[in-house]
Length: 355
Length: 60
Image (cartoon, rainbow over the protein chains, first blue to last red):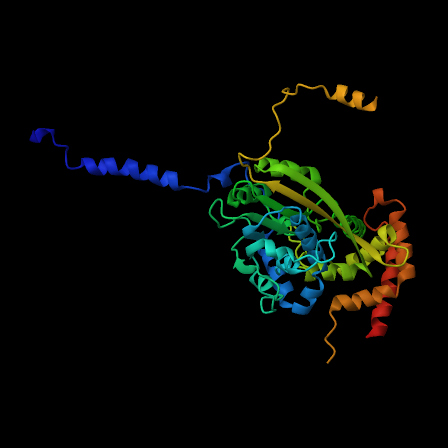
């Protein structure tokens, strides 16, 4: 009998394979590896610095919030259509909590004269941003008394990883910050993963022809003054790309639509100053370091005015906002029927209706 | 105390006084913007710059 006992070293041999299997089962970051290699377009540190600096000038930063406030309220308007209560919501790329402020505003609904703020639908809002100074810029200001929503501010080390367990949130919002993300497919997949089943993601980002006026006139000015061009306006996602990206990330029942917001400025210098105060200066990798030369700035002002200027002497700047809504997949959602399963010919119905 | 104006604001102010020259330079570029090359409108730009320099000197 004693000979049948396992040799003393046996338990250790057994231990190692079981351990490794356990640790493999606990990995939950595998979704980040999907897709091709991540192409770095933007310098994250530069972007972070720009936001911190912009928030340091509190008054200017507040004055330049008009675009973010406008888009945040348009994002919140989309929430009015969803008749549901959200216990926990995430605002990804919150800036100075523009969405929280828009949620707290009363009478956002244009169809009814007096409506409670949308924030009554939300119990807790987690506002996450990489820039601490910007996030806490207005933390001291009191929120309206009618507000029942708790706002938790969270500083992220990077906006490209969302540090939450899967199925944590009932709603994810994002307004005007996803156009600075390098790995957009990865972040969308992570958003999909932190959402509970059958919960919506409502986002807005700059895309398409945003600032095309500035892009073209700077290119012409640099070409003529220096004989070459370097990127100054970011490459941006197009409307049709966004639909594909949402689909690839696993969202269902997608809605993508585009809004153009045109802002008139007195001159290009005012435009660029405001972009800086928004923390939206260029942060492309491989851009020409340092400021634009004065010659290019002067040439740019003349060309912008000539090419795009309004008749009243102001200059327009177009911001194209891509709005997107996607739902986390769930079994009880309405789904399209399988292809070819239709039994009734649509042509017959339409012809009968005409008669 | 008046806050110190940024250099870019001084540039903006000086350029705004040269709208005539800026329009001439702008027209020179825009008339054929598909074939812009270095110093295509150097003469027009120098006039704009002269005006800008004079304007920035007088405002100081």
